[in-house]
Image 1 (cartoon, one colour):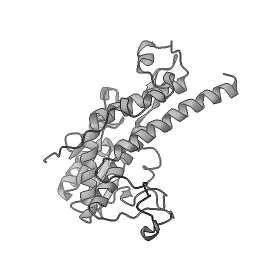
Image 2 (cartoon, helix red, strand yellow):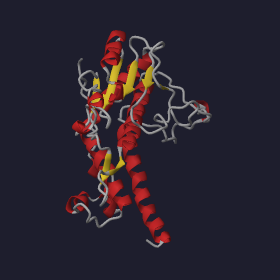
Image 3 (tube, helix red, strand yellow):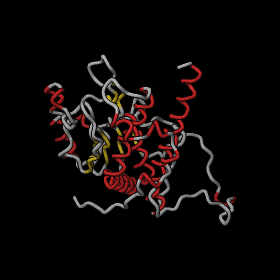
Image 4 (tube, one colour):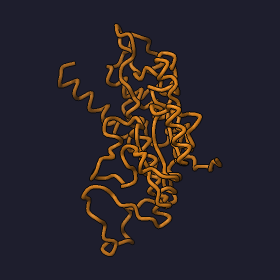
Length: 285
């Protein structure tokens, strides 16, 4: 499969992270601390680890995410279906339930083998990586976008998993692979006295990456003149009543949107870090 050259996004240092709470996001802080001797509360340590993982993905997987956005847009434009099942984005299936406000009506939650057809896209993690499933995907000619999941043979430290789970792998079969650096342990925070780290980040990673892809898939479709309906009951913009000369709310269709979405996510995480300090003060911690 030919790979397209995706646009490089601006580095993280240029988006204003310097204005966020230093203790929550200082990489040096976490590198200097050792097991059992953290100087920051676990809540802020977790936020820092989340940001480290997301930043790595942004710096190293942007091209793959952009290529996936183009593949999604191409599938929608050709009348195919985009299935999302097991992207490891929490219990909400990446918010893709019916009538979800703010979500483009692109992904179908779950995967229906009877309805799937050639040219469709399946966005999934490696939990379905059995040989029978892989053979089915290939036979159906379904485009596979996959990522690292903690409970698969694609995860780091997979030797800690049972033999049957280690066999669940999609890395070599995916048309587009998004590396997330997931480990079989899942957690990222070491707590004294606990045998394994706590605080998984896979769901956060899943949420952010799927919305990054959706943002640019919608931009690409809009640039091609393809209308994408939205779920929910949000008001429809009446273009005849918009003063286009003074209106600046629309995004530039030639500029990647996943970058802007990532920036907004980091701002929200920074706000959470600030609020944690207030909560601790109220609780007398």
